[in-house]
Every structure is written in structure tokens, then in C-alpha cells.
Image 1 (spheres, rainbow, N blue to C red):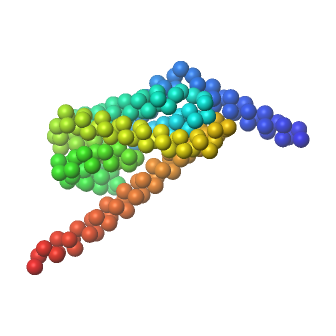
Image 2 (image 1 turned 180 degrees about the vertical axis):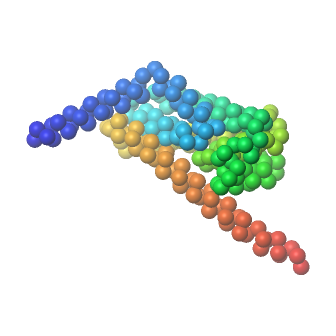
Image 3 (image 1 turned 135 degrees about the vertical axis):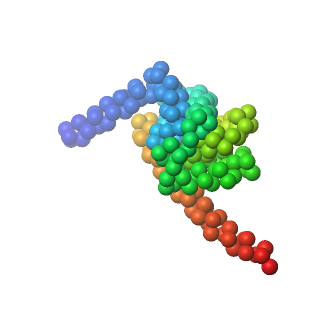
Length: 221
């Protein structure tokens, strides 16, 4: 019984520690910084932070959801604008994670599509980890009009923030009595969904690439 009591005490202390972090005045600044950096540096897991804070809001702790969404959207927008500017200023070939492998494939796809279907490409790209950087850098490098990019990106950033928050609300609804656990689950959910979305994007690209030749062959009679 003493061991169990000690474990429960540790759990409560961990809860208090996590809640102290997310209830502080700097958490919204951290949210803004992380969502901004994620716009041009993919390893930063901004989805996980948004989902975790949204989940926490369902427990009555942490910042209000009505503050989390606009801050996350603003950070996403600023990050995308930085990525676009990088594309304008730095040749894509000099950006390590965009000149080979998966990054190069995304850049090639974006280059071929950005002027034909800009809105679907830019909005969908925001939901793909790493894809948003490739798409937005490519848009800048290809000379896509900044004003038009801004208009589309406002919509993309807001949709992304709402989507991530809805996922957090779903997690928080089941963990209403366990605020610290909702943070952990939110982070893990963000990582998992990011990986799933990325795999779906890869599958879709392979499917469309495989179907393209046969589609062209039908018109060669």
C-alpha cells in the first residue's frame, strides 16, 4: 500500500508540474513560436502542441480554446510566409531537405501544380508534415504572386488550426478528469496523425503517378 501511495503521489506531482507549465503566461508565446518555426522547419511538432492545448481546454485547465485557435493560425500563417520568402531568396537546390528524396518529390509536384491549382495545393500542403514547407518554398521560388499566396494561406492556416483543435477536443472529451494525461495523449495523437497523413499523401501521389500514363494512352488512338 505504501508503494501505491508513493506512485499516486508521483502522478499527482507530475500532473501539477505539467499543468503549471501550460497554465503559465508564456504558453501562448510558445505556441506562437512553435507554430511559426514549423512553417519552415518541419521537425518542430506544432500540431502536437495545438492538439494538446485544445485537449487540455476541455478539462477546464490551460488557455481558452478561443485563444488557442487564433494564436495557432497566426503562427502557421507567419511560418508559411517565411517559407515563401525563403523560396524567393534561396535556390531550392541549396536547401538540404528539399533537394533529395521525399522533399525533392514534393517540390517537383508543387512546381508542376502551383499555377494550375494553387488553392487546393497550398491548403492541402498545410496538413502534410514537411509538405507545407516544400509547397510554400516552391511557390516562392516559382514566382507565385505574394498577394494571392497570402489570401490562400489565411484560409489554410485557419482551417489547420481549427482541424488540430477539433482533434484535441475529441481527446479531451474522453480525458476530462485527467488534464495531464490529455496533454500526453494530445502530443502522441499529433505525431501519429502527422505520420498517417504523410503516408496517405505518399500513397495518393504514387496512385496518381501510376494512373497518368494509362490516361494518356487512351488519347493516342
